[in-house]
Length: 436
Image (cartoon, rainbow, N blue to C red; front, top):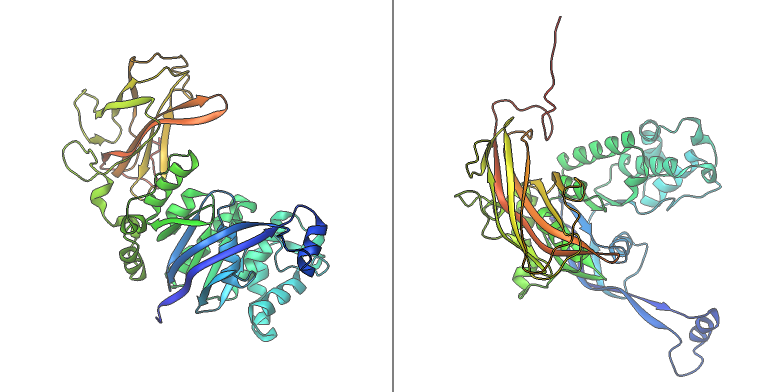
């Protein structure tokens, strides 16, 4: 299909792991009948289709295969099985210093990188000033790359990658190295690329950036694709994986999470996070979500929850500037040492805006017995901008050194903030303004 930028079909990558160097030599020479290695499956049967103009995020724990799949897409690695098709000129920022010659200076490395991507000297000449201006590393551009700090590396590498007009941009976690001003400049370029209809594949542990910029998200774990879908859904699933509470869906259709529809909408420029908004708490009543995500060991159970306004009336609509309270009732099914009660408020795209818990607030640090019931209330002033938000609740704790989730309810209630004055950003700083 003409609109497909990247097609990955049943890709696998197997590495041979040797206990000692002599085993590697024996294997290479074919000595002996037994295997001298163990196999590590970095990727197993991974499928993904990325259409032109999409910004697709890939998330997962360390060792899940994120960097490996990017290296296969860019041709740095060859898959053990399966096939990859790429339609368009790729510019990739895979890892710190990749594609740099440590003995070359910055200028020489710009030409080296540009040539590797497929640009002529004349084309690089035309882009040189723009690249140098974006990198902004001063006279260091005339010094050998081996003298660069990590920040200089990423500045120059990203300046080359993003300013030579690629059709497909692939970035692997590199932006976390730059300072805050450089990161802001890079993300501004991301916005420009999206508006221009470029294709972006983005790997990051920064879930806020994944939520903000990506149309779709693919979740990998231990070399296997767990699913793909809207940023909010995949980030919530990823959080289950992190605490060992992920349960595989019953069907392939459920696992893909409306992937085909999301891709079609993203190709038309529609924000995937706005699909199926009814699952984000828009169910009427007092904002309860019938399709909330629930998991945990159930050693403690959240049995009741609601929001009240400044008059104590249950509601899902809170007036900006007024005080409101989040209530939850928790029943202990087993003895727990110092449970932590928490809430989080996210926007409809899944970005966490604010939240707190009883440990941070030093409000409750006691043990509880099986059968005990605790009623928890969080009272605060509503300073978020007008709009719809999602409330999540949780009971967690530590068993030894292990963080444990006893009960979590993601996106359990819709909270609508009613406002006649919205400032810039997520919340209002309630500035006192004077003009004299």
